[in-house]
Amino acid sequence: MTALLLVAFASFASAQTLVSYTPVGDAIPNSLTGQPGDVQRGRAIVTNRQKGLCLLCHSGPFAEERFQGDLAPTLAGAGSRWTEAQLRLRIVDSRRVNADTIMPSYYRIDSLNRVGAAWQGKPVLTAAEIEDVVAFLLTLKE
Image (cartoon, rainbow, N blue to C red; front, side, top):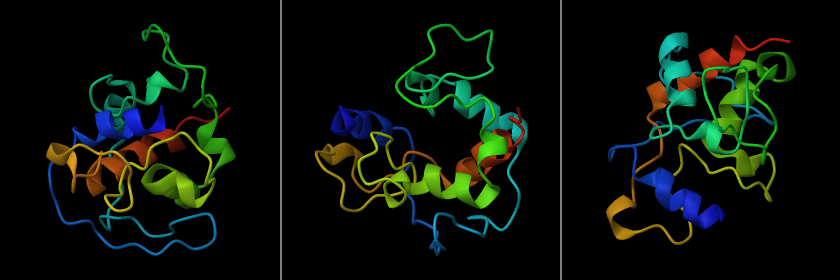
């Protein structure tokens, strides 16, 4: 299932050069863009079934969204459970936190398995989109 998700997700971001980042423990302390993300754009990505596809596996405080996932932890309270830096790493490359996760790496293009030729070299989300999602998730407090 993970490989299929990676193939599906990889088709959504355009080809680009990835911004370098340095994980520290279970976090990426610095913004990928040097600027904070936009909360409204982040919410749109999280709830969009063609862009972030977050609700395929996660549920959250989105009453207007039908058919939310139950394969992964709820996004409700994400801003209370993790710091900005911890959220950033979990979205960029969750395998650095949990090697067995089924969550795709949203900002990684190397060492992926079974990615179709048309989608190779493309992250799921851009650096700016990562920051937007982080900004939104930080607002989800319990």
